[in-house]
Amino acid sequence: MEPEEIDADLEWEMEKIIKSEIISYDRRVRGRTRTCKELRYFVKWRGCSEDENTREPPEHLERAQELVDDFHRENPDMPRLG
Image (cartoon, rainbow, N blue to C red; front, side, top):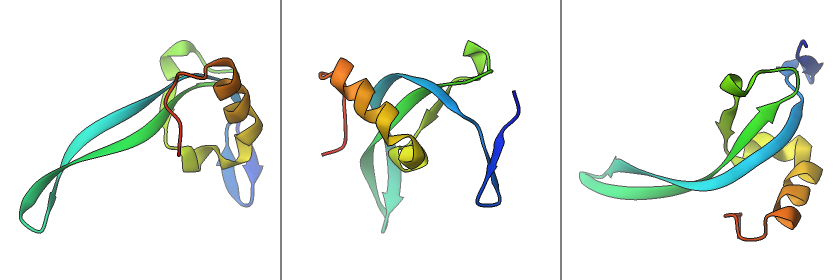
């Protein structure tokens, strides 16, 4: 399957969200190390193998809000924004 062109960008179609997780990483800010935490969704892409699943930040899934809502309705204990 080929990506679809949307607003001059190529986009793949999401098949489903497999899980959500909070990732942690250290970042140097003004000479100090801070631990940052961010939400990521593990995404299965339509027409792609399981090996090609990716972790995506919420802002990359804005066009798939219905899939995000469905995922959280089916998995209420998984991490989410807010």
